[in-house]
Image 1: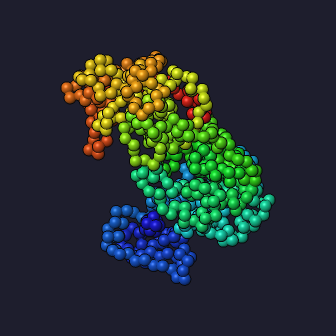
Image 2: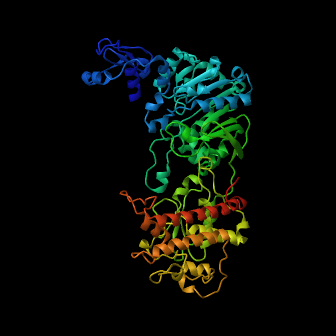
Image 3: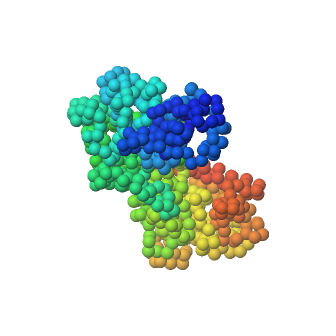
Amino acid sequence: MDSDFYLADLFVDDNDTQNLEDDLSIRDSLFVVYQNQGYKIAKENIKQMFDATINLKNKETYLQFWKRYKRPPLKEFQDYIIERRDLLVPQDIRERKGAFFTPRIWVELSQKYLTDYLGENWQDDYYIWDCAAGTGNLLAGLTNKYNIYASTLDQADVNVIHERIDHGANLLKNNVFQFDFLNDDFTKLPQPLQNIINDEEKRKKLVVYINPPYAEATSAKTVTGTGENKSGVTTQFKINEILKPKIGNASNEIFALFMANMYEKIPGCILGQFSKLKFVNGSNFKKFKEYFLADYVTGFIVPAETFDNVKGKFPIGFTIWNTAKKSKIDIISTDFYDKNGNYNGTKNFYGELPQNINRWIKLYDDKIRTGFGFMGNPSPDFQHNSQLYISLKKGIEHFNFYNFTDTNLIQGSIYFSIRNCIEANWLNDRDQFSYPNNSWQTDQEFQNDCLAYTLFHGQNRITSSEGINHWIPFTEQEVNAQAKFESNFMTDFIKGKINKEASNDTLFENANAVENKPLVFSEEAKAVFDAGRELWKYYHAQKDANVNASFYDIREYFQGRNAQGRMNAKSEDATYTTLISELRTQLNILADKIKPKVYEYEFLKE
């Protein structure tokens, strides 16, 4: 990689001159070494009969660049520069090969958890193998080098660890080796490690201690129809053919292949692993959980953003498993820490959840009758809530779109509200929304609160530019409209003028067919309507107001769009800003009222 040539150039003594002739490498065991005004790669690194030499293409350009810097780096920074080789590795390679750095704060904490479980002298009693070692930083702080083994995919990383050993790292060179854990046969392992793995009792004393690669074949863009699967992420591994029938869709994740291969070939060992927690509560891991039977011991979770170049707000966990004890993953309780290492409490993850909320909402989805809006039903966890919206037209995303009709408006509003009323954060990002109990059916106030919340939420993207807007929550008189609305469906529905049990396909000719009871709203919901009414009034006072405007249209009118076509976050109209701020305040108060019901009716587990 480019990073190896950078290290070769950097660890050069320039002898305080600007001549290339007297430049000498100060580190001869790097994967790539600067030599004779060019580069050398030792034959053992690339498995050939002779050393590879690479000449500089343009010595003058090279010279002009390095004139700017004094080499070598100060001694106090040299080990850190080599140890952090991963910072120079491209993101996609980092994800696929595991070339990333576990923050020292979490390394130390993970070793504390291992000590608490295995005992104060565990390093003398147990063997340790990091089979995704990278540059070996996960092993920093361990004391018994005679019981530690480290393997990594790239010989360049082996060379880096050997360099670190030369400069004081507490490891044995013979115990650090190149090994492809998902492709190579275990007969390639050093004989002492093979002896441990092949002995049933010694295997029980082997701790597989890893932060494995985390690349996956699918992404959010794949689901939304804007991207493709990452080709070859897991299919390139031989073990995939063996494990896919056993673990199903989990085989799309490299870290899951590491877990399964370890479980398959080193039965009875102890696993201490950094990873996402989706193997516990992820919807694609059902088959994996039937295969991976192990006793959960202890663990903790931390914000993913504390790891270099990891995007998104979700938990990364360190969990310890005893594979000698067969137990299906049910509930695991983890401690959680903030980004500074402060303990903040415990968090449960559920392996055995009821059917998810998308199974529930399909009971009310009507694909036959003419509707007045569509709502996407993305994967049932917080990380996918950004894909949840309401519009007059179906989106292009690859998931079900719920068809709103007069007979299922309330159920759709409940789904929309309970998925949006609790703010997503790193801690709940992977929590799964579930099939509820039946108690919601008799809670009219809860149902009506959800309708009010849905009408005024920002993810309600109904726009009159796409068709008739049936979502106007006020009458013409209430907002001083300049003309009659094309539809009064929503206010008729609220007043009980719509037959919610109607079965014919013409929705809006039933307005007075059956007199239902008007909806009764809570004080919090009424406050939302009051704030919304003032906003609608202000909009309809504008000379160029669109009489059939939706909430989305009103926001677009005052906020405008940027050059990329995205709606601006703010408006220059001070009155509008005050009104929309008040509406959002009241909507947040209503959200707080709905939140306890989300857990009471078991849409979410505590």
